[in-house]
Length: 326
Ligand code: PBG
Image (cartoon, rainbow, N blue to C red; front, side, top):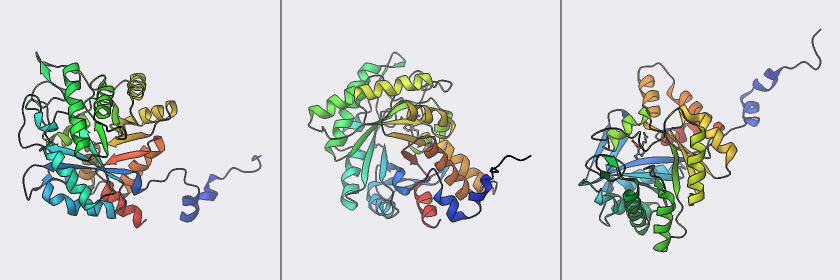
């Protein structure tokens, strides 16, 4: 005999309105951060082959772009710079005349309340494409820390609202916090790429940011993909050093890591839906193999359901539009 009352989970699935009412997770444009690739020069709008719809933009074209982003309700932008010149030390990264330092005021002027987050890393600025200073063929962690502090200070001085170190050097959150505080930027938060994996999903980004390593790879400083307990150590360390928001990156192939961090710590948590995850969806959609809108919203939902508060995504503008017309 059937048990009573009979379990029929279908009862609440019959109407869209009802499904929405009982939805456990909701994504909003306000959860998104949209990455921007800022190019040196004028009149540059160069689409990235492997990232359809994503362009390198020069500063003079930024105002229009950020006005659109803000109109869509997106909370923040994350800036990556393509410098005019690269060198061994990545010195344009902390130059007051650097590409990012010039872009920040332009954005703040166009949309004062859009949160401007700036990437703190060397790989876009170094001739060798690594995220730190190279000594005898390897990234020298401690010499890099000093430069990371300089980058963060110069970005804060240019008006950055939040700095986001993506380099994965040990001790960088502390170094950056000290550098910011020394210059009076006590209220500038740090969003640290706490658990950043050495992932093959970054390939399209390296085309966009022109930062592929010229020799070797990043496995000696980014995390090894099989590890999750180690991610908790990375996050604990960054929190101890003063990180205000912690991040897991990539997102889609690391949903278990997001969940574990969410369950272990009370810090705000960001997840980076990276370039390769975006490119896969775009490529399949272009072939007519997947419904881009449905799949993208499902992925963003999954990242949020896994425990992320903030999602950094190249789909932010499209998703914001789709959510509006939902
Ligand atoms: C640079 C950096 C990378 C990404 C963000 N910052 C590339 C890398 O570490 O090689 C990847 C972002 C993406 O794939 O969307 N430190």
